[in-house]
Structure formats: C-alpha cells, structure tokens
Length: 193
Image (cartoon, rainbow, N blue to C red; front, side):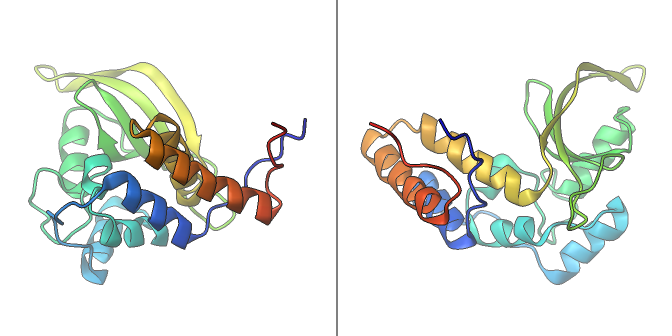
C-alpha cells in the first residue's frame, strides 16, 4: 500500500471544513488587527504565522482552541496575558503558549526548535504542573512535536476533528471533500474498497 503523506490542504478547504465543524457561532471576540499582531510579535519575540492570523480572523471557534490574538491585550484569554501568567508561574520562556487545557496540557510554539523552511516555529504539546506557592513548575510530560508549521498543524487538526465528529452525515461529507482533494492532488492514493 502506498503511504504517501497528504498534500497540504488549500485555505478554501481548510475554511470549508472548519466552518462546517464549528457550525453557526456568533463571533465572540474581535479579529486580530495588524497592530495587535505587531504588539504580540514584539512582546513575545516571534512571528505569528499568516495562517494563524487569517484563521483567527475568519473562524469563530478559534478562541475555543487557541489564545486570542485580538487587540484586547488585558483579556485573560489573550495570548499575551496567558504567556505573562505562565512565565510568572515558572514556564520557561522558550515556549510561547497558544493554548492550555484545564488538565495542564499545553500547545506552544517552541522558540528553541528547528524552524520550518518558511521560518515558522515548530508547535509542541506538553503537560506542565505549576507549583503556585513556590512560583515554579515542572514538566509532567516532556514536550513532543505536534507540527513543524501552522499549515501542518491545521491540516492535522481538521483531519482529526473530521474522524471524531459525532454527526455521521457531516463526517461522511467532510471525509469525501478531503478524499477528493487528496486523490486529485496526488498526495494520497484512492481507497481500495
């Protein structure tokens, strides 16, 4: 069996799938602006990938998965606030937190990691336990690579979300969209059944 890796999904398919998975949702936060991205990049010492900015601007469920990139820099869900708080609590500065779960799981850009060909930082996941009284913390699980770029991360995210979506008809329709793209792009082979 041919095990070629799927080619990166074009933006229009990423957005079609993300929108379908989210369903109709009111936009709860303002989209990022050129100024908000500039402030974020200056404070965190990173370049926010264009795809992250575009998805944050167009996908209402973005804030369910990631820290906000909008201009409300004091909001607790903003990427700057989250990174300030976690660094104060002992998370090493080589990680720029994109999101964290209440279970201590984190998704972050790894500043010390090997950059992708376009210069993007790799995305890693890990568990980190804070010891608030001491101001320190420790890794409960070592950082593990998730993706080398935003494109790779969002490709994997939509493919995983489709596989686990509870609505069978929607899951089937979205799988067909991906399969059609994968086969037509030469990135994967058609199923044998």
